[in-house]
Every structure is written in structure tokens, then in C-alpha cells.
Image (tube, rainbow over the protein chains, first blue to last red):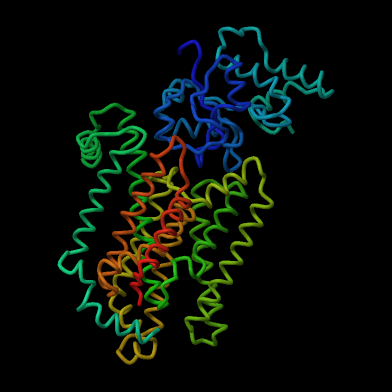
Length: 166
Length: 356
């Protein structure tokens, strides 16, 4: 993987909708040390799977809005791995497909948890640069400091896995 | 109206429009369709030579592993093949259903969603998406409610028309059911979560073949479309007789109730299956039959297969544009309307009125 991996942020899988440039998604991808694979202006743009193959992203991040039929994030990733087309993409083959965390709001789009999103994305894209960044601890301290809410470890873990923290 | 159509149809077989007189139109259309399919495999985000396409298709059809890069194999066999097949099936189905309806209802403004098939399918899909069903369940719900809407139209239309199945009662009931469906679709959109469900419903309703896969979308629609096509093709010459009117048809030994039921059943199977896989793709079933009749005359024996072939060619071409013109996908339903509506007006302006 080159120094700035190309990142595809998937908003929906069926229909296939991805986030392009010039928006807050593009901004956190760049801030976290990546570059947006989808070089089209605007967010939530419908594209063909052929286009995704051509972009051939290093990393795929799937937003929780792409989950269907009450699937969890893990189930959604399993489906990608089992899918005949997606499983042939380098990012999926190399296990560089991730689920975007969701807490009080989707971390990836226009919410205060965008501050957590940048840290999460930076650690996800460059784990070797952030060996001591503990996202569970970061999430708990963020909630405690800014929202005056004491998260349990389990709740923080559920947010990081894009599950309803309950 | 009835009398005019009847005389025209009677003469149609012997006297197809002049210029196309000597061309074997169905053969030409078949060749065009095959050429269109080959071309569709070649164009897209990545262009392929006929050699690469041929070797990939041949390898898969003979059960070998193709001798090309894995990405090319994926694109040609897993992405383009299902999409091209779906475009051909859906285009042929909608156009043939439209041609059959226009003959049956003796009305040039009739499209295959006349009796509520598209509306019902839309309700099924919107409801399925709203309830977080998986893609296969959404498609099945669309298909089932498409059929249910037409059954409702038929049952209510027959009941209201006091058992006469009067064409007018049936059409009016169809309008009522379609309007009811559109209200239900609006209701699902109104209550849908604007961050994830609403965009999905909207994209579905716009129509498109971008997410067609063999297993999830293609296999479930092949049987209903094939069955519907056979039902329509077997009713072709009876459709000609039906243009004289129900009583005249009965006097010529054709059971008008049976023909109506078979044609409506066949057209509905095809339309509901098409809409369930491709979403709301309008105008194909309305415009293509007119073009087909301009080419081969109004004899349903030729107009029906010609409509199917032309519909397949048309939707294939439009879908090629939808997936290749821009980096993003252009919704298919928008494109067919943008091409179909002006074309229809052009036909009117030029005085081409193939139904008269």
C-alpha cells in the first residue's frame, strides 16, 4: 500500500452509492492520511461496480447506511467477502474493508463525532503510526467530556462496530 | 375507432407500409439485436476487443477458466453479462406487453402498466425496503404486488362492470388502482428514514439495471418473462381478430374473455417481473410498439415479435449510455423518458399515426 492509500467510502451497496469529493467525507479521508478513490464531485453519487473496479481502491469503508435487512457490520463484510464480484477487489481480498462506526449519529457525515472519525480513520488507514491510540478509551473520554455521558467499554465497542449502543 | 382499426388491420397483412415492403424486418431486427449485444459487451468503463469478449464468454459456456486478467473476467462475465441479459429481457418484455395491450384495448396511449402492474410493484418494493427486507425479498414483493394490483383491477373492473369486463370499466379501474398505489408509495416515502431508507426507495423507483446479478435478479425473472412471452405470441392472431370488437370476435369463433385473460395474464407476468428487477422504466412499452408498427404494419403476428426485438435493442442502447456516458450512473427510467417522450412527439408532428 502506498503512503496515502486510496479510500472508497460506500454509502449504499444496493444501489451502489459512494461519496465523492468536496464534502466532509472527502475532508476526513484526507485528514486521516488517505485519498478519496472516488474522484467525482459530490456526496452520495450512484456509480457502477465497473467504475469501482477501475478505481481499484486500497481500502473500502462501508457506512452503516449500507446495511440491509437488519444485518450487522460483520454480516455486511461477510457478504462482501462472499460476493463473487466484490470478493475479487484487492481491498476485500486483502482484508482492507471496514465498517464505519456509528454512535449518536453516523461518525462519517456531518456530526460532532467527526472528531472521533478522523482518529478512527487515521488508525484504520495507518495502524503502524498509531500503536498507542485506543479508540475505546478515546470514544469514552469524548462522550464524557463533550456530552457528559459515561459510556461503558461495551457501549463504546458497539459504536465502533456500528451497532446500536443500546 | 373500432371500424377504422378493423379495416386497417384486415388490410395490414397484405399491405405493410411501402418503404419497408421488401425488407425482412424481423431478420434485420434480429441481426441488429445480436450486433447490439456484442457492442454492449465492448463498451463501458473499460473497453474490450471482440477477441477478449469472445474468449471469456466461450470459456464460461464450455466450463473452462478464461485466460484473461481476473478483473476483465469479472467485468465481462459477472457485471456486463447479467446486465446485458436483463436489458434484453426487460426491454423485450415491456415492449411486447405494450404492443399486446395496445391491440387488446384498441388504444394507442396504452402502456403495460395500464392495469396497475408497475404501481403495485412499486408499492411492494417500497414496502420491502421500508421493512429492511433483503434484495431478493424486495424483488419478490415487487413481483407479487404487481400481480396482485392487476388481479384487483380485473376483479373490481369485472364486478363494477357487472360481469361484462367492459374495456372502459377495466381501464378506468386500472387508473384508480394505479393512483391508489402511487399514494401508498408516497406514504412509504413519507415515513421512511431520510438518511438510509428514503434514498433507497427513490433510487429503486428511478429504475436501473446497475445492481443486477445472476442469482438475485436474473434467475427469478426469466421464467415469468418467458411464460408471458409464450402466452402473448400464442395469442397473436387472436389479437388481430379482437380488434373487430368482442362480439365480432366471438362470431368468428374466438372466445374474447379467454383471449383477454390470457393476454392480460401474460403481459402482467412480464411487466411485474421486469419492474421487479429494473424498477420503473417507462415509455418503452408505449413508444416502441408504435415504431414497430411503422416498420412492419399493424398485423399483431408481426408487430408483436418486432416490438419485442426493438424493445430489447432500445433498452440495451439506453442502458449502455446509462453506464458509460458519465462516471456516475444515470437512472434508466429518466433516460427512457427523456428519449421516449420527445420521440413520441416527433412521430405525432410528422403525422405518423401507425394506429390509425
